Length: 124
Image (cartoon, rainbow, N blue to C red):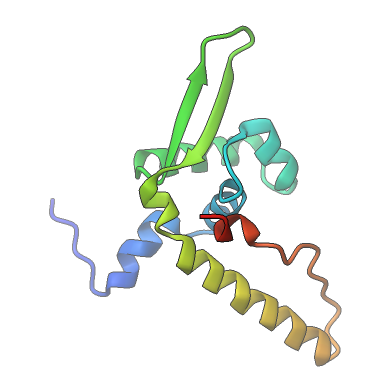
């Protein structure tokens, strides 16, 4: 059955939409990472959800999975060229979010931004 998008942004959200995928991609913007390292960087994600999101991103050719032939098995995830092409979108989302948090703080809201670093995507 033919997939129909009414707006082009639907095609983008189809690949990177949701709570976790942009966060995973931002961390991978710093370079290849193992599943355990990603889990440490995103402590509120469950292992099951992390694996599911990684599989979906791999199926969409946004990330690649490299398995090393050693015991115990070592698996690393990294951005593909198509994944790297999301750089501007993810930086824009990060800048917008940073401004929003600052505006919320200025208006007296009790929020905190722990890490405003999105430099991984600035490296390439």
